[in-house]
Length: 359
Image (cartoon, rainbow, N blue to C red; front, side, top):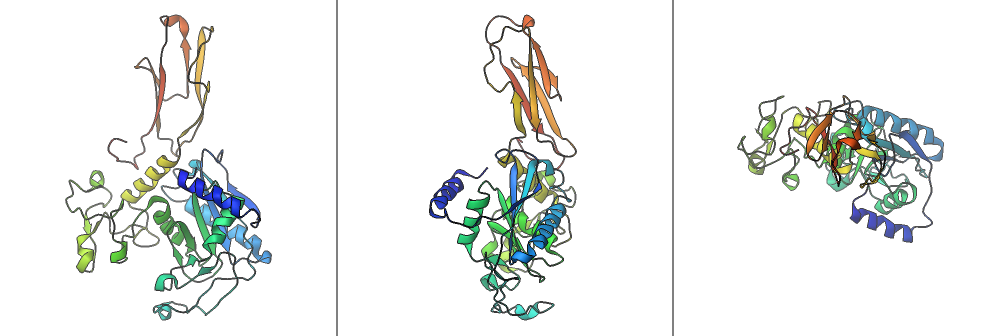
């Protein structure tokens, strides 16, 4: 499931980390073959050996929350979820108290420097609530040794204080808002979504939900304009921010406890489509059939189906439609002329969450 460059990276890493720590891997949700389905892996940090049951419960709650809201709930059948019980020497997360905005945290976060396996810390990049894993080599080694076939990683820092981050590895703490923070941060990490509040000039980039195009007829989300509150909304605050536009004023990528806007939902679903093929298995498994039997059965034996199921199935024999919205067809060879014939089945997701041109 990893992109080729990552596969190479971790194959090389394995050569260097043969002695890396092996941890218990819990299966929180299993839908199918890890080579075929999308794999989310949750890592705990700052959980001691005595706190591993807490880690498992926290990870399970995080997974349940994420897949309880759209569009993750619609495509839960496309995902496996695993938790790796990473054991730290000490409990908690580091807080060096070096950011200028530390005093604005409520409640105040005590200064701490626990010995944790992944090195999660507040005050990253000068922002108090930005919690990141600083022992990246350990993160890489844990994944390479225990579950290299991942698609998305979530790291939970065992701290009751508010914090998290997007990036390659999405992070959150165990604050009561942690599941919602994770839902926001995975929007960055999984679907490359931008914040819909203005996070700063350094973060101003063309993304699925951020653009400098102000023309509603040309904007990348033009098919959604005028629906579900989607428009072309100028970012606040003047200066460079006035050059950038977002699709909505009430999206989860702007404020916690809001739903994802239609544009962000679509981006998440489209990323899912780039990672997996909903046709998992079919029969017969070969591409060329030469059989003396009169009736030839063809079947899609395993499909990833959204909930509700929005897959449209169409069968064509020699370019002519012969069946639709069925997992199987039976071809009578007596109705065919001598020679080669071509049977094609297409599966299209017709979800109302999508308004993509040339989908």
